[in-house]
Image: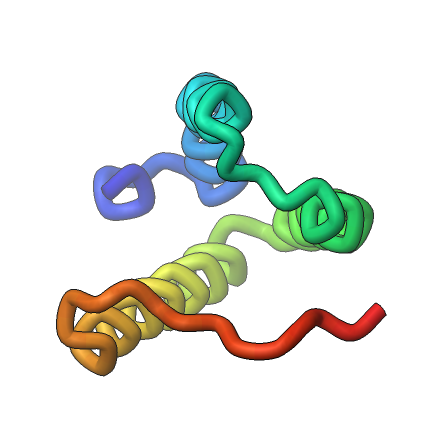
Length: 103
């Protein structure tokens, strides 16, 4: 929506990520309070996730607006299609994970 009304991709990304800080903090606190956190998985995902976010932000800010708009639009379209596909494939059921993570 921000891109559709003409906001620069870097500013739209910054606004979205800044708004995520509060919601992520509250969500994380709720999960921690109810004991829903597997700290082993957090330790596996934290560093690659942080590096990926940093590299993605650097990549996005290195593009000019005309180039970044279709890139951001494609990424968001892909992520939305993936979420929709998972929802339809699972039919409202929660995903079941089998086995153990390697590492």
